[in-house]
Length: 493
Ligand code: GLU
Image 1: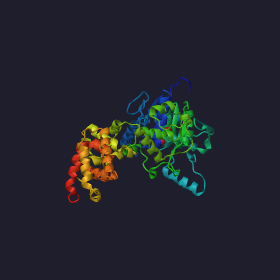
Image 2: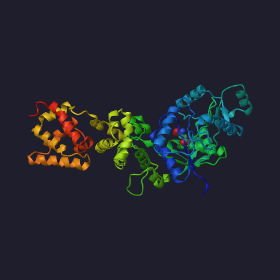
Image 3: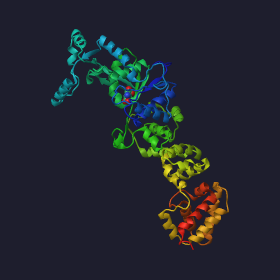
């Protein structure tokens, strides 16, 4: 590619499943490469398998990519000069190109049926021979083959693999050499008239002007076939970069048995998109220093795909969780509240959603330290929806055990009633005063603060008292303590 040629890369998922973390990493690499070089990113949907492709998966892929903060310049949803961008809509183009190869003798008709191929494959295996297409149909004369085709006999088109050493120019691995003997005459058009995977990819890549192909190294063996096709079409071969695949901790390709693999699952669990993109980038790359937190914008500036390691990338959810916590820490209470609200909605927490915004922010602030993901806010926040005076059996038992309960609760109510602001400073002053009162009586602070918590919340666990006071206000907390009194009948003097 010449220096002034514009970088054009593509992300080419098959909509046969939700966007997998591994594919999301490929998409991120392509996006970073395009954005870092003022290039163009194309989204191409490889939906040639009608049985397995669905519009639901297509929506999941597009939605997940957008959620990650990635965008593209051309694609099925945004259009572009090189469309259509769904392979199912490009079949005529593939047929034309396949015919060109047939005309020039680079491809030939194969009339072998699936049953015949299967029988020969089994025989080869039984004899301990490696199976590859045995070129039975290469020997057919053109007149004979054309006659059979004209008579309606179904046939596939196979590429005639030339004898040569194939060189894959890979940006990570250098020049990878493959002997074409290792490759059989692969199918470029199936007998049902649909294009084979390799033909579709290559025709798309050169008709879309793709300059760099960045994808997982599971496609490295395919790349040899692709190089042959580019050459057969007289098209420029793009530069390749085959990155390592995402693996589970056991070294196997990351799959459902390792846990969730879909980006949308992580979205639903409450991960921040920036934590996920940060994590996917860091899996095989590190900056020259010890920084670990990167926004997408910082990655555009600093991440160099040529610098990623070709060795295995092992998915470690603990590291992702750590990054998620770090990115959450960087958010203000208000920003975090905005992100928590959809989770309260999804979980049907209408009472909490009806709270004034300031209260909601206090509630979120009070639970944020314990959160690993956004969804972790929901259950702890339920404490704020509890009606006054409703005391759990466990809290009641604790209250009944508490010595000098009368006096302790009286001190709490008095301290609370002496204040009216619900800011943090006031709340801290109330707690400090209660500690002081306890000390004056030769008590541990717990003797006052524990019944405070139990009576106000009706529970034995919950956020720091300071937040409880800020949430309900000093007067509101005093009211809640008084509302608990009937349940304590018999324990109070
Ligand atoms: N559709 C292929 C996949 O989802 C990608 C093909 C390519 O990038 O060349 O694995």
